[in-house]
Length: 275
Image (tube, rainbow, N blue to C red; front, top):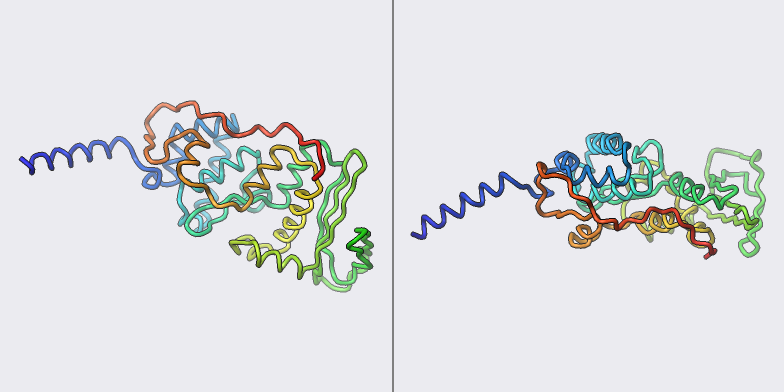
């Protein structure tokens, strides 16, 4: 009798396994093709969703490190980029999906920070540049008076990074970090060497820009979300489920898409204060 019950249980489990799959077993391609997931990205991106998901698969196929990351963490990182309406093509430098300790993380590039700032309509000018040997004339950390001679470069050696913005209300800010200060910040706070190893200057400019905007800039809801999500480890499975409104443990690719919960901000409002 016990044997018969055992066989029945095995058959039942096998039938159930044919109907549904776990997020892990489906893999990234299976998750991307699941109607539930397609529905979520279509809700965020509308007609641009197929192109975005195709770029996600292209990125995945070209990055061996990313192929080792948990598929759902890649989906979550991509969903953050989609919500911020930023491309994930690594060559463009707006946003990256970075593998770290078996999972994927969303990272903003310095171009992504500039793009989100410009969308607020509050910035008249914004930029961040490398400062080469011979270009720095003087820098006063207290008054933030910076004098550069951009025609005075003595070599291609980068000695620091300068960030600047001016708001339409006239407020302006200039910051300067030496390369040593950026290196110290990287060693203290960066959990992965992924971006730094491929484009050190881009990551350094992003570090300076992010610090400047988070302290003194006007932040839209999208910018606040981008700063918060930038480089964060993916949250626990329960929290992710609540965020995107789908069950991560059981996903049936054949099911009809369900309307996801509206938990992600649209990012149109502007926080009208300078931190």
